Image 1: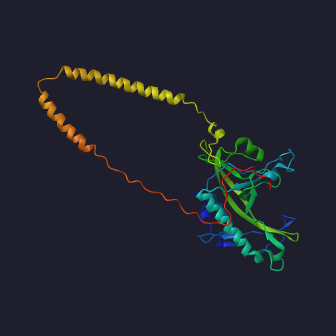
Image 2: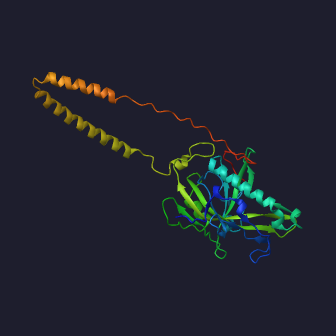
Image 3: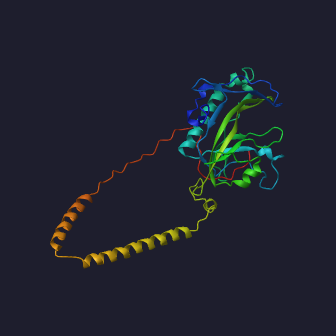
Length: 329
């Protein structure tokens, strides 16, 4: 049973989020930090844990290791342990998008209490919702999440699960994940924590919030489509598409039906040989059966239910559906 203090994304109420002013800390040389707390419906005050909806993995994911010219973009691989969660136009993804807009608005409204009134004008919010463009110049939107990593080994410590298996999968590096799972072959959902509110020490600077991925659940798919609605052919061929087994079952079924028909014909011939003068009585019984059958064959018409499209809630920025070549942030 899931912990009651892990909320579905659509049950989160950011008015219950409590944020203190950022302060010096022993963990960062470049930031001031505040640890936000959330008041749960049962009265518990603790870190906010939120469960995302299930989403298709057709775009986004880890930042690329190299640029288009083959130059390394990160000094160490663990620096790539970040996830860009692009927003599609499903109702669930749009609801998550709207929820993150609510958090951005709260961080904007509470700016003075987070930064301090004297320095508030010197800082701008690092948005929870990131924005980039595809090769056609169209805007695309994503949420920034970070995987948990061990400070000493630099290994990923986020737990990964495949649907139907309660045991975690051992994945310690970005390379291990990428060798095991390919874009377009699975759907996923996450449990994330709002682990800190931060402010840069330099002036002027940025302030914002950070999420850590505690768990990721992966559901393998062979019928997934890309953001343009096209069937992903690589995904389709991840399992056998040979229909030999289906043909064998069909042939076996036909043989069984054929044998039954042969037996029926033999029985009918025996019955014909044993017919007597009771033909008139038999015809009367057949007539009654026909009438009864006609009454039983009356069909009821089903009413077609008209499904009206749900009206989308307006948000400040609307995601698009086209697949993109995403540049590294």
